Amino acid sequence: MLTADLINNNIPQLTLQDSVSKAMQLINDFRVTHLPVVADDKYLGLISEDDLLDAEDTKLTIETLQENFITASITDKEHFLNAVNYSIKIDSTVVPIVNKEAELIGVITTADLLKTLGNFSGANEIGGIIVLEMERTQFAISEISRIVESNDATILHLNTTVDPETGKLTVTLHLNKKEIAAIIASFERYEYDVAFTFGNESFGQEIESNYQHLMTYLDI
Image (cartoon, rainbow, N blue to C red; front, side, top):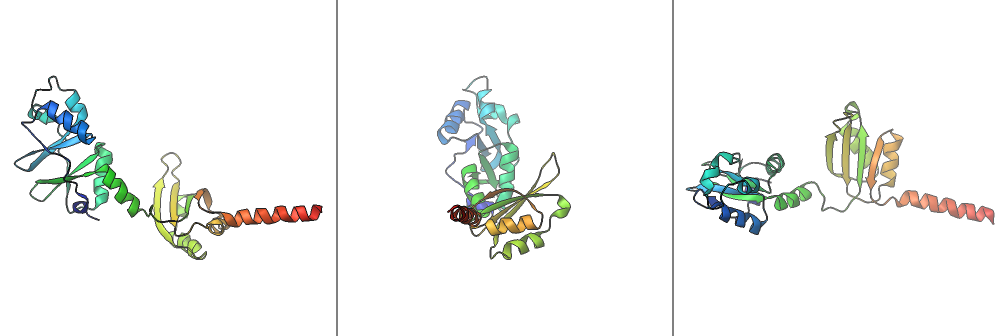
């Protein structure tokens, strides 16, 4: 999905002639951390709530704070993940989107990014989650997929992160079914370190239940 598909035109724009007090009021009204500033439709940058609060006089114009503008932006033809990265780096609840003429065509809010990221990661699909920890040299997508598919399941989404302290790889698998006990057992049989699971482990619970019934019967 491209950034152009997520543009929100409801967030207001500021001009250099707008006052600090007006900008602060709009930031409060729309519950954002930054607002874009334009001149003749050209994107000049983002002004932050912190910079507005530091202004000596709320009657001053935005132009007096121009040296504090965040001038970086995202184009309307980029993948939406670039907007996610921008939001994280700038620590902003809005991401300015410009066209090839550097004109501001709108912003993307973090709320919309979160929804899109959730859909992108398969969070809206019903299924189990298995988190594996391993050395980087142990990571093999083909084998992981084979283990999952051998249990009549499919990987909906796979994500990897590296622990900065241990250097180990954390592999998160989002599967298409919640019954994951057999899959967990398969990973453990192949000596994978299963760090976390979320799903219906009724298979294991059923074994435990049958064992308790057997013990009760033998006592009789």
